[in-house]
Length: 165
Image (tube, rainbow, N blue to C red; front, top):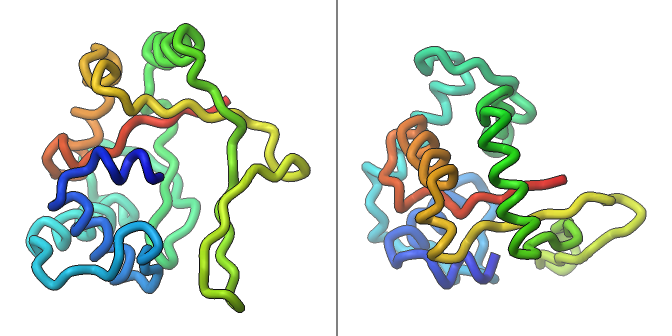
C-alpha cells in the first residue's frame, strides 16, 4: 500500500483518506487524518456509483455482491477477457512480480493495522502492476479505462492493477 500511496496524487490521497474515514475505517497510519478540503463532488460521485452497482442499476453490468458493509465489495464475473488475463499473467511472470499474498488485520485493542503473510491462511501470490511502464501496456490501459468508465471517475483515480493466482 505504501508504494501506491507514493504514486498517488495529493487529490487521490485526500479522496481515499476521506472515503475511508467516512465509512468508519480511518487509514491514519497511511494518510494521516482526512482533510476537510477533499473534492466532495468526486467522492460523492464514487460512492453513488458503487450504490448503483450494488443495486443493479449500472447499464449491463452483472455482478455479485460479496459484502455491502461498511463499503460494497463486488465480484464482476467475466469482466476480464481470457486473452487479457493471460497477457497480464505473462507480464507478471516475465517481470518476476509475484509475491506471497498477505492479509491485513485490525487489532481492536491496539487500534492499529497489522500486515503480514499468514501461511496457514493464504497460499496465493499477488502481482501489482504499479510501474509507469505497466500503465502503457495495452491490456493494463484497457482495464484501467474500463474501471474508470464503470465508476465515472478519471482514469488517474484507478489504483494499479493487482492480479492473484
